[in-house]
Image 1 (cartoon, rainbow, N blue to C red):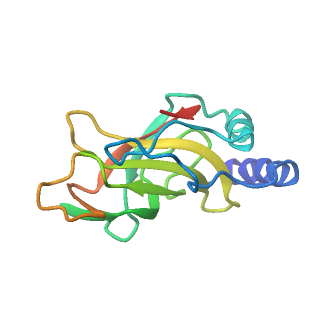
Image 2 (image 1 turned 180 degrees about the horizontal axis):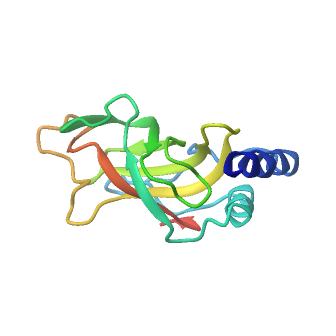
Length: 162
């Protein structure tokens, strides 16, 4: 039932949306972190239809290629993450696609698309988060990379990137 409902919603969304937001053109702050960015109308509409609300959250493996690692290295650029728990109608193993910035003191990860296991990619707006500075880069991180202790974080739905 859940997969059928997701496939139906996906078909409606594909018929009514024209694309997804990309990370291109995001202004950077003086510390190298990305500045303010609005969510696309398509993402806001999709999240309303999927009943994903600001603050909805789940757990995510930050890099699909480094799952369950004690220490991972992230690079500036695109990232593929994996939901480890359901988030609304998005099931466990849904892939999240986004962008990583490593220039600031902490890693910033913004997600622009979700790809459910039995569906098509849909636009979203979400961020990776951890409290207590746990997305802070290790001191030995080289430029363009971030070494983190642990491979998991929370992922939260947002209505704009701040």
